Image 1: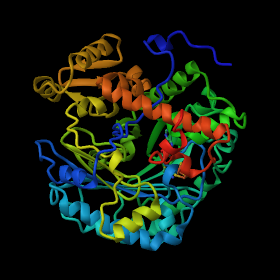
Image 2 (image 1 turned 45 degrees about the vertical axis):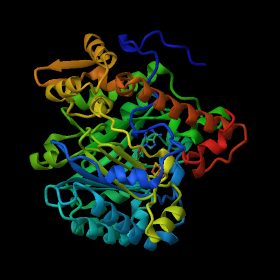
Image 3 (image 1 turned 180 degrees about the horizontal axis):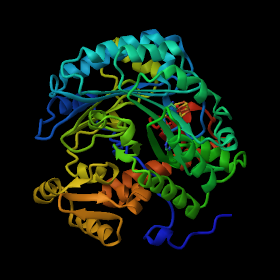
Amino acid sequence: MHTRAASLLGTRYRELASNTIDYWMVSDDPSMTPEAAMAAFDAAPILPAATLSLYIHVPFCAQRCRFCAFSGGNSPDTKLAERYATLLVVQLHALMRRCPLNGHAIRAVNVGGGSPDLLGPRIATVLDAVRRLPGFSDATELAVEFTLSTVRPAFLDMLAMHGVTKVSFGVQSTDPAVRGHMRQPRTLDHLDRVMPWLDGRFPVVNADLMTGLPGQTLASVEEDLEHLMGHPGINAISSYLLTPGAAPSLLAATAAGKIPVAPDPLEQALMRLATIGGFRRARWVRRGTNTYVDPRRVTAAELERMAGNECIGASHYPAFLLGVGPQAVTSVPGARLENVVDVAQWCDLVEAGAQPIFAPKCSTTHQGDMALWTFPLRWEGLPAQRLAELRDSGACTPTQLATLGALEQEGLVHAKAGGYSLSLLGEVFMGHLVRDLKAEAGQRVLDDYIAEGRALGAAVARGQAPDGYRINNRQLAQLVVHDE
Ligand SMILES: C[S@@+](CC[C@H](N)C(=O)[O-])C[C@H]1O[C@@H](n2cnc3c(N)ncnc32)[C@H](O)[C@@H]1O
Ligand code: SF4
């Protein structure tokens, strides 16, 4: 049984946040149309400090990790791969043609999944197209994810040939028992096999770790860190706190007693503290939101190029993030476009020349306080200038500003001459800060998303919904949890 912690590490929080990351969620809008959403995209203003990044999603995967937040669209059926790679390029070109920032420098391109390696050598189709985009240059970060258990040497050769600057893969935990509970291969043999294939060809090699997984202990998390930070072939680590609301399958397995319960809140807080403290002690530096890099094992130019792990949201209000592929989200000033999750449906729509978006989850709202939505997430912090602009334009409410002040008083946020950044404790409780700094409507959307994930998990546990990839397709969630 969990005992309810009084106050974690002397903060206002009693448990870890249910979110570490922010998908730019908005409340569903049944009246939205694809035409209205696309018109808002076309009209997105180019503001000072505008940047352009791309996220390209590959929803094929042969694993069924219980925690996977991306599993809603994952398909093991790679027969589609050839057609899929071609259609990715079709949507990429269609979005770029309409994008007001087309032709401007591209900051970063992330190809993620799922398991992009399941495209095999067909990844070349995608990378060729990306490299030919106007705005792509040697300064652009080109990052590709793969899964250790399925990646093949020919895929990695293709990435090297196309000048990929960063590769990234999931490890999550090195503990065989935890891995087993998560339905991952129990051993790390795959890591040992794949490392030599990389052959020093990629400037940044990133491994993902998670904390808060059922069965994890503080000692096992410390071992994970020691193993990966000391690994000669790995120079970057992304560390995520489990978002349970994005993992209904895991919640259902816990409820059914198939796997252990999650670590208790204090243990979870100590896991984050050990992880982030470990990076800081070793002088690794943060990039993006949850990525830490060993600055002695990348060049200064490489560090400069690293945008971080951004499939999840634009860094600030003027930023353009174009999302290509099923489930991907486009975020530009004044428009949020969410592509349909279903792979076959997405393919049919793109092939027919239609917009492959799911209108009810799109928005044409100008989310003017975006910087505060993401500020605590990102390593750059909140520059004083940007905060002044937000304050002067009325983009953030007095309540939000008061919250920022209170967080500073409590030592969760540091104020320096140039602006605000997270303290060590602030990084530990990052997800809470994201929520606390949102305006009320934003908090409600986040809470609803987590509640929906929990309801989906409960429906699976009761046998009212099948345990499979589709349970995490949030475009279908209303059908499953209609009466909750
Ligand atoms: C979807 S994966 C893609 C990488 C690749 N498929 C792999 O797992 O090797 C990207 C990362 O997101 C993180 N992730 C997935 N589900 C999550 C969840 N529910 N909460 C927090 N992080 C999660 C994991 O660390 C994972 O490695
Ligand atoms: S975490 Fe990665 S390997 Fe596991 S199911 Fe999700 S996409 Fe596949």
